[in-house]
Image (tube, rainbow, N blue to C red; front, top):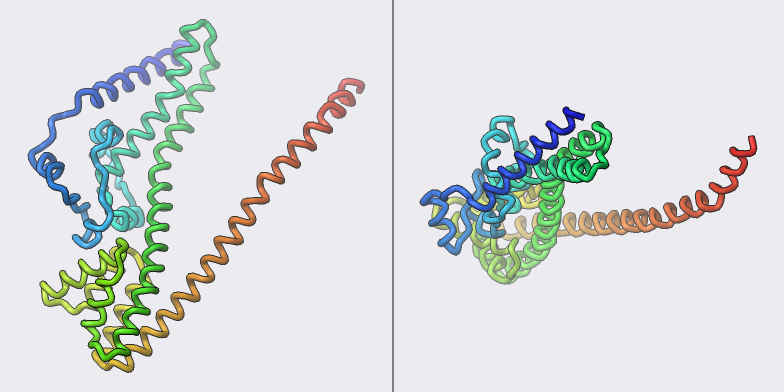
Length: 306
């Protein structure tokens, strides 16, 4: 019992410290103050300006402020992984803010069972020592991993939206090339038609390439590598190989657009099948519950009569 009380007291102490950090946050640096006053979001570490300017990064929440003291420890532990950094880059989020959210979620999961156990112990009905400890560990691990799963799901949705926009972008390029426009002109003019964030990213990338005197397909390939969009990287490679010969470029773009539309159709069909399978889960659970409800009294009577 003394070990449980020590763990509960330690959990309450850490919780009070986190509450104090949240109520009285440390004084921000001059760079952070200027970044907050600037309407444009700051670029995440390792991200290109084109990607960072597309999706705004919300870094001023209470969870980020509470978990910021633990960022250095998580950085020293080798977090985040390379794939997670790529997902954060695709979303335009800061690595430091993500690590702070992970620390806050894990700390909340660790302290919640301790607070509940302490409340019951104070009321004279303590739990067995193993219950709050096991529950705290499970919730801490779950809370620590939850931000990673959320980022991966959001990054997958962002990439899917970009692929849909890329299909329309390829169709627009084909129309402009058929009208006699050059390759670079078609790439630029087609990007100015769309209004979604993928078109914004493509426009910024092409403008940066023009100002830095880099070929537009090389810039698009770098954008595809940053966002982990293999279709955009393949498009850039195909256009680079085709050079400036209009007919060959049109044929290559037409093939890429057709392949992309086929893949999107297959992905939509797979999502529909997965949704259909998920719809059967509640029915199975209801059937199992009904069977247990019907046969449990009979099994109880049989077991008592033996």
